[in-house]
Structures are given as structure tokens and as C-alpha cells.
Image (cartoon, rainbow, N blue to C red; front, top):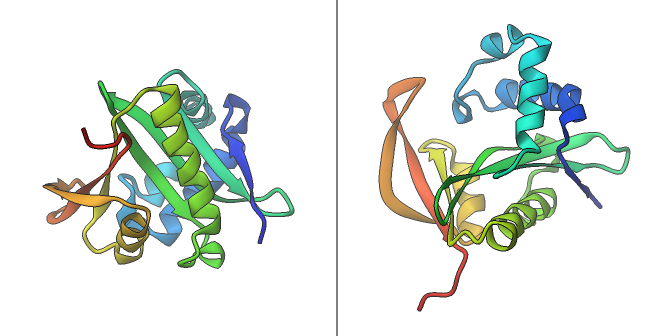
Amino acid sequence: MDYTLHRVRADDWRQCRSIRLQMLEDTPLAYLETVEEALRHPESEWRFRASRSAGPGNIGVAAAGPDGTWVGTMSGFLSAPGTAKLVSVWLHPGHRGPEGGAAGLMLDEIVRWAREDNAADRLVLLVHEDNHRAIAFYRRSGFTPTGHTEPYPLDESSSEIEMELPLRPAP
């Protein structure tokens, strides 16, 4: 299937809200809020989130199917000098698979943004230890665990694993 890459803009807040609710319904352990919390957000919060994705040092991308419907999303931000962080990764279940079409398209744009637009040396992420499908995608995409873990904020009996992708050749 062919996908179209879309850079999130401030006026995309309705699509951002819709896809966020789908994300939280589908994979609740992957994100740091619940569906119930997200449903309580006023329109102003959704407008803020969309505009933040389009702001300096940030990127939000969506993959759209042939009919223009968003089927996936990823975001990134500069978290420290030389480091970009990948967050809010989701792909509709009907568009997942090892070939990585939509996911690969979005990740390629995040990597390009981090490397070329922001001179980042590495792209990092945190992934829940039980999110095996996501971990497998990140490994296929070149990410490796750093050895750092953090307690998962919504259930501190579980952990998030930090993974990184070098964006520059080793010296």
C-alpha cells in the first residue's frame, strides 16, 4: 500500500486528537496517559499539542492511507544537545507488519529531521518492556538498547527500555 507522509501543523489538532485516542485505546501501556485522561482534555490542549509538534525543535509526522486518513503517527523533539527523542509512535493495527511501509516512512522522516535539520548525533526512545512488537520494529530499524531503564510512570513495577540509533558514523 502507498502512504503519504504529512508533517503535523497547528491546524491538524482534530486529527491529532482522533489518532491519540486510537493510540490509547489500542496500546494503553505505550503512552503516559489514559484514554479517560485524554477525553477530558479541552480543545485548547489539542490545539497546543498540534502547534507544539510544528514548533522549533519538534516534529510530528503522520502517515496517511490512499483516502487521506491518518493511519499512524510519530513525533520527535530535541531533548539535549546532539540528542533527539522519538515519542508517540503508533500505527493502526491494519497497517502493521515487518515490511514497515508506513512506520518506515515516518521513521525515515524523523531521522532526516534529527540528522539534517538539527545536527543530532543520536535518536533515543523509551519503549515499554512488554511492547515486543515495537521493540522488534526498532531493532529492525537499527536501534539498540543502551542498558538504561526507567520505571514506567503508570505502573512502576514495570520498566521502559531506552534504545538509541546513532545518526553519525563512528569516528
